[in-house]
Amino acid sequence: MSLIKKNKLKLALMWVLLTSVLLVIVALLPVGDKVDSKAAIKAVPKVATALTYEAELPLYDANTQGETVTESTVASIAKELAKSYPKTINYVIQKGDTLGGIFETLGLSQTSLYQILEVDLNVLALDSIKPGQTLIFTEFEGLLTRLELQISLAHQVVYTSSGDNGFEFEQVTLEGEWREHSYIGKVEYSFAGSAKKAGLSLYEAQFIASLLKDKINFSRDLRIGDTFKVLVSRQYIGEERTGENRIEAVSINNRSRNISAYLYEGTYYDEAGLSIERAFVRRPVSSKYRISSSFNPRRLHPVTGLLRPHNGTDFATPIGTPVLATGDGVVSRVINHKYAGLYIEISNGQTYSTRFLHLSKALVKKGQRVKRGQKIALSGNTGRTTGAHLHYELHLRGRAVNAMTADIPIATAIDKKKQAAFKLALSNYHAAWDELKS
Image (cartoon, rainbow, N blue to C red; front, side, top):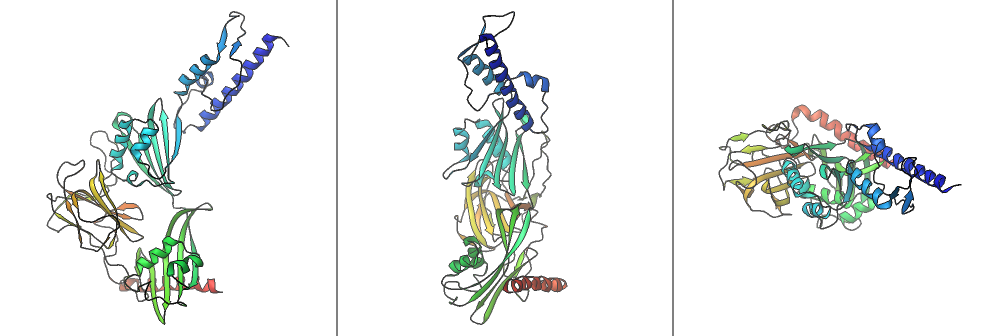
C-alpha cells in the first residue's frame, strides 16, 4: 500500500473516532440544549483518552499536496472546540473541605460562589456539606452554569445560572419506598450494644434513648434480661438504602413495667395516648412583636422575576430582643453566614428542626440541649437585611413549612376524635412484632 493511501486511511480512522466521541457528547447533553447537528459534526471535541499518531502526518489533497497537519495544531483546535461543550466535574467532599476551598481548588469564579451563596440563603444546604456527599459542577465556555449538591440518594439541591441575574435553586426530593423492619432483642450489656446486635444502627439506638430519656434512665434503670421491640421504616431508592429512616414504634419491658412510644401524625405518644415529646410553641418571641413578612415559598424577586422563596416568618424585633427556643432539642449549628448573618439551628427530634437568623448574639453552643421557652439568642441585624428583625423557620423532615399554621405537636394528648384511629395504629404496630415472633 502506498504512503498516500496509508495516510488517507489513518486520517479517515481518526475522523471516525473523533466524530463518534462528539456524537456521544451531544447525546449526553441536557434535553433542553439545542445543538446544530451539522455544525456539531464539523467540530472536533477534546478526547479524554490519548490518541497515538505520527507527530507530522502528510495530508493528501489534490490542491494542497505537501501541507501537513501537526499534533500541536490538532491539540490547539481541540482545546478551542472543547469550550463549546459543557464540562462536568464530580467532586466528592473530603474531611476539612469548605465550599470556598473547593471553588479555589477547581479554579471556579468567586463571583459564582457568592451568587450561589446568596440564593442558598433560602435553603442553607451548602452550610452543612459533609464528607462523602458529592458536588457536581457544570461549566460552559468557562462559566459555571450549574451546581448540584447530592445530599443523599433521595435529596438533591440544584443551583442553575440565570445569566446576569445570578442563580436559582430547586430542591429535588424523592419519596422512594419506605420499608418497615421489625426487631426484638434482649438487654445483655448496654442498650446501644444490645440494639446493634438485634439489627438496629447506632443512630437508631441513640434516638430511642433520647426519645425516652424522661421515662427511663438507660444507664441506671435497664437490667440484663430486659426486652425491647422496635419498628423502623427505612427509605429505599430501588434496592439501595438512602440513609433516611424513622422510628415508628418502640416498646421496652423493664422489670415488669412497660415504656413505649408510638409515632402518630408526626408526634410520639405512649400507650395511653399521652405525648412523649413536649409540645411546641409557634412564636420564638413575645406576641407583642408583629409579623413583618410571612411564609411564602413562591415569592418572586421584584426586579428579576426569579423564584426567591421566603421559607420563614419575620418578626419586627429591635436589636437585642430575647429569642426563645420553640421546642426541646439539641443545637446542631451556630454559624456566621455572609447573607443569613449569625444563625442558630436546633434539631427538635427526628421530625422537626428550627432556625433563627440575623442574630446579634448566640447564647448557646453546638451540641447543647435546650428546652422549650429557653432564651437562646438576641435578635439583630446581621447578614443581608433591610432592617433589624428575626427570621424564624420550622422544618418538617427537612422541608420548610409555615410555622404559624403547620400541624405541629402543641397538644399533650391524642384528641378524643382521633382515639379510635390511634388505637388502630397501635394494633398494626403490635401485629408487626407478633409476625416477627412467629
